[in-house]
Image (cartoon, rainbow, N blue to C red; front, side):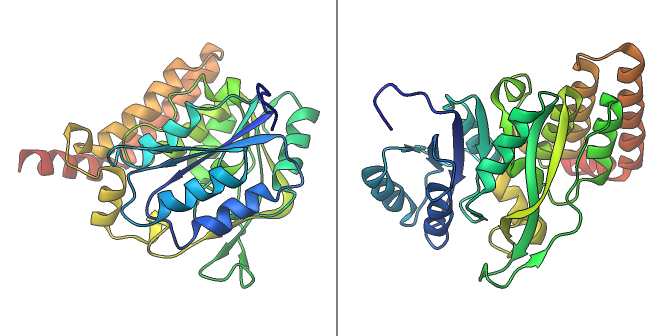
Length: 291
């Protein structure tokens, strides 16, 4: 990468204690058939050899930039940290545990370039444990290509199970209009809902994303205590009332969307219904707070 060159794409990789997996993740990105990108890696105060590996790649490839957090700021804040360093027209988050096929980036960017109504493009997913060669096709990846913003929003909020689509390529200007990933569990899904209000989300038919699924890397396979540590490395006011914060996040997105009043009201009604269905968790949050 020449001095002063602004790449078309920024890839942001937040990482923490990933010395066992990060090399494969970085190699899969640096080996992409599309090469006009920068890779920004934020090490969230790892206590293993992760930062030494990042420094090694910085020496070997000018596209790699590294940030080392002075303390663990939590997973969500670290995801936002790499975005704040982005310079490209497009942006992609990349986990330090997962692997991307060689044409992942090229296929996503071609989709975005071909259709200005699409704000996010992502390929289909394969899941693996320790060996990417022995993976299973995941059948629940979603697209949100409806013409109605409220339909896209409700579809994303209702159908998104594993948030694989977040690893796709998104328009930077659209992502700047969101609140990124706020400080509560489920904020990544709220972000996808917000993007769905801003434009269409395309699902490419090729299986180009390989997601590692084990108890150390996938929050859905962690204990409740481990998930809380993942989001809140130290207990603060932000760790209180997580269900209420999630409901408020959805409501804030629906109310602030730049869409027509009827579309906005449909989105808000869906949030209110979802909040009602989640009332047991919200009541438990209040009991936990009182204790």
